[in-house]
Image (cartoon, rainbow, N blue to C red; front, side):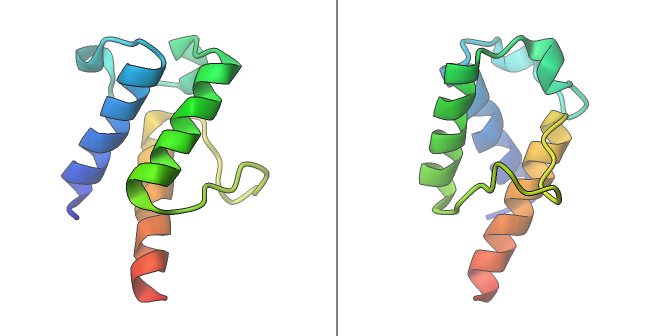
Length: 85
């Protein structure tokens, strides 16, 4: 899966679960500025885990989720780890 495919799938998940305009999402968008409800964030994380067949560590300091870029880069790392396992 290419980096662009991963990014697009993540953006699709955020747009669907948080009812955001897909075209307004950018890699530099801060999650706190997107006003995502906590329940929607849980659904987003479930959607990411299901789509990419990975576990997203929510309490791991090394997996910070401040911007969309952080989410995309984190998922790319998780996918790479899974493929190399």
